Image (cartoon, rainbow, N blue to C red; front, side):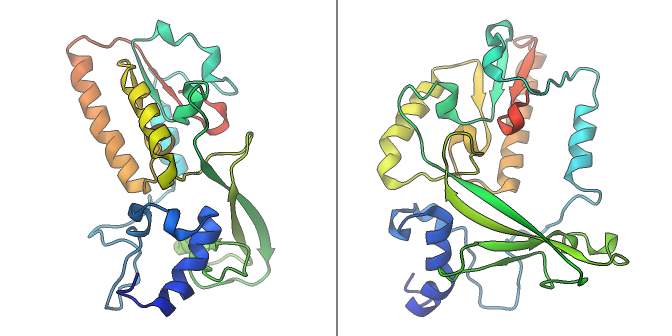
Length: 253
């Protein structure tokens, strides 16, 4: 980090990284820290992408529109282990890869999050959607004020809602938000990768399925590329039924 100076690194990155990942930054892969942009201008966007935005009516409406299809069967409160996956020709699994294999090789490391909701009578708490807190002495990593993501929807509202975000080590029963990929875990990761590649009728996708720290746009782009490849396979008659697993809330698509 010498190119931005020790003081800036310790002020903005060191404390936040230690809170977010629960370990010394030296143990975090360089690919994680390289995600942080360094600029010498007044561009305050997080990404360098030419086009940036969020869905006008939110992501919920997009997901509902996708699921509103006669060929999609949505089952709630059903665990994938209760389904006979051998009755399907192909599987897309976006849950934890070590869980898929019953943790037979050991447990991979994850971080989870706790969210503290707070209501305020003021119309504007922090003036922007997200503020990160790099000070190690502040227990939360960031505060999100969601009305700033779509300010045109809330211009006449009174009061605001914020969420303080706390990062901690994952334990069984928590939601796996972030694969850690510590340097010492490379061997276990490679073993699970080899095991996953031996299942030719299963595609492991997303952060948890591939055990990578991915931005949402990268995850969506990978999903679209995989979908195009799968469609090509489907059109050749090689695939008849499809089941896709989601870890979140034990839902199956």
